[in-house]
Length: 359
Length: 212
Image (cartoon, rainbow over all chains, first blue to last red):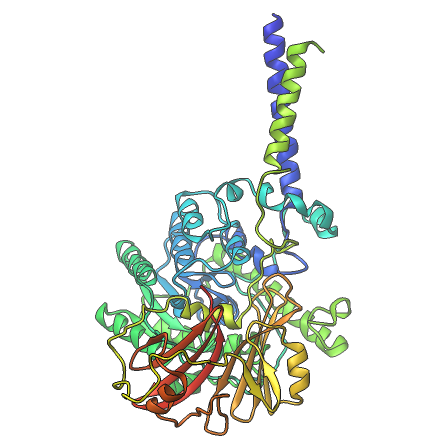
């Protein structure tokens, strides 16, 4: 009897400790709401209806340059961008795997800038790309592929090991968003309505070696194979970001690869493509040419919508009630956010409003 | 509470303490909301990262035979710091005081980090471009990443300019640490000078940090 009591007490204490630990872990994990909002991009996907015909995967050149709302409103294409800041190619691959657990799009669009990174780069970006994933084999593989030497697998399983010291830096956001973030994105799109003309954009400094790493080619091949196995069309793109510099030598390698494997490749930096999209880097970028603002993203998406419709078996799904209902909410939030930012720009000179005049 | 219960309580408390990492858990640098170690767009997100994939040097691929009268085997004193209009620019060092000394640039460009607050800056002074990057641990601290000499109006401290020949370079600098038909590199701890070549002619010169 006494032994049972001891066992019960031990279990109760262990359980209590576990609950307290989990509660503390949630508290100290970054909420990514007021600052570095991009940290919520990956997790945001799981709240979507998971019924998309086109899936974009890639880095900021995806989630800041394409407007899924434009694709929906003008072409009835349901799309989602699974992107995060400096998303490396293996992270894109595992996010593709992860997405295919949930749905099967007809077209996958991959932005090739990340081909230049052959090794894990930076913990902060890793965390933003990986931590938001639901647990699956893909997430485990993604963690293992992404970790820098200083990181540990266990700290991804128990983020409290990484964030416990944040207790002294907690802000109002950590309590306000304790039970979850508010939606900040629009089918994976990060919206900015301000403009900063592109001027004096530097050309790239010559490199001593322009060849992409074997690791990158391997993951591109795996991505291609995964798409083929699932009867998905893979489209390679280079978004029209003027910086970081996209070297002609890199472009040539992608073109040769696309030709060899009969993949579609669209480099939006090509003069004819830039002209066709109508992009104006005086007005359509919010940071001097690195990323497009919402007006540029809509121009680009308008051209790309036509391209997608003309090349692939995509139909206008705007008359499907369930989908239309989901998109109506996304579109409403999108236009409201655009309007809010425009008003803030007029009133305060920045998109966030008076509270943060530095943005 | 009896002795066994007390042991259970202590064991649970010990587990909690262990999992919250009080003590032995080594921490990656920096913290805050972002989990911290922050990246910068320019060096970390572009050229430097690409350079980290650099191929092994190809000693057999020299663009021209080393002239017999060059000091290829002699120890040549190379200045890995660049002097622009009397201002010494040291790659890896703090940038702001240097940029202030250099005065108004002919052109500037800013490349903000994705998601974070750091910015890489590009300053153009005639044929010279100075590129900075935000310090890994302090995004407000800018460091010199690279100095590019882009035309023949700018010479290295040893007198080599864009347009000089490979032989001119060898005569001044000696045998490169690494070279291929496309470039020759002289390297010291954490710094390098790279001469990019078009045929036998220097087409660009780059002072840069070396990331191992």
